[in-house]
Image 1 (cartoon, rainbow, N blue to C red):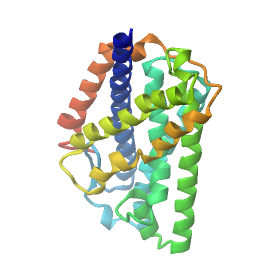
Image 2: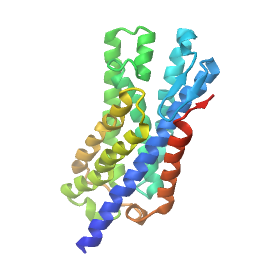
Image 3: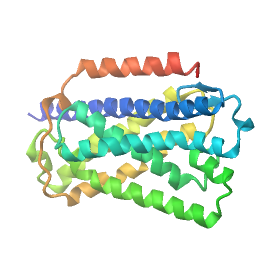
Image 4: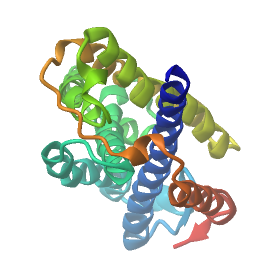
Length: 270
């Protein structure tokens, strides 16, 4: 019995990793498309790449145009998280599609509030550029960063239960140790493995933040993992697909990776 159970848990790690990478790629592309669309509208002549947008004429634009171009990506990510939030919080567990939506919600919010949090440190980041362009006082920058950090912590705290409810069996949630183990397999290991995959897909490096971001953006996931031991009322609503071989999901990831590398990496002019 131990063998099949171990196999099922290993497949849970694999499937959640696939969901994580798929959600990460979708979030990245939507974020960059936001920059590209606003850049095209304001006349920066953008070229959309897999994880960045090259604006050929941005420096010649008025400051506020540059500000809106920089803000567009984070705002799209905020919209993504906000639209998925009621769907995710209303849904109790489910299958792999719902796990993709949960990861997408988290990554959307993580993009926006993460940029707020790191704005004073990374001037090359989207919010960092905005702070620099608007010459925002350092004290205000620190306040914005604190708001971003607080928002991320609140969101991370709230998703402990939604992740636990993907458990296919109630026995996985009965003890604090088993809840920690489950969330480790559905959150932490997929984040670590998935971040390595995303980092490889991000190559070649345009900015050092491209290498740092996949891992650093997931540090907040430690919170819902550790918080799982305090959640004593979670109910198991996960489906069998979470621990099965789901070929359509794997094909979707392969297609997304090929588009990411072969179509977007070379660049698409807008």
